[in-house]
Length: 64
Image 1: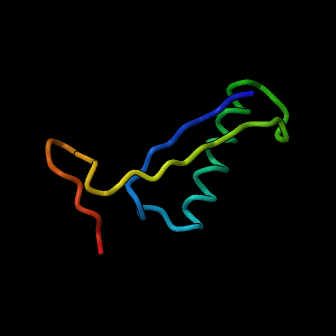
Image 2: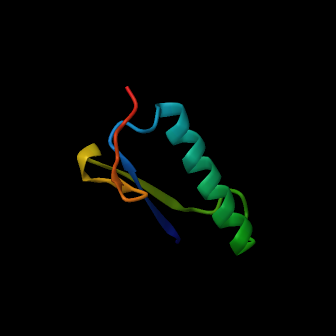
Image 3: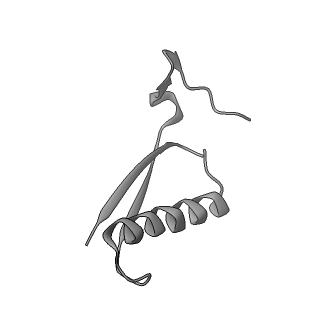
């Protein structure tokens, strides 16, 4: 069974965004595998400390 790991800065996603991300990744996996919509998949979202990120050569600064 597939496992997708997603790393995001701490606090970057709302509960609704997290739900949509999980649904979208699941949909992509079952589409690519040509599996039934209820095929089991795991989506693991790991929040990393906001100070531990860099983006385009700069330290990530979370939006207030």
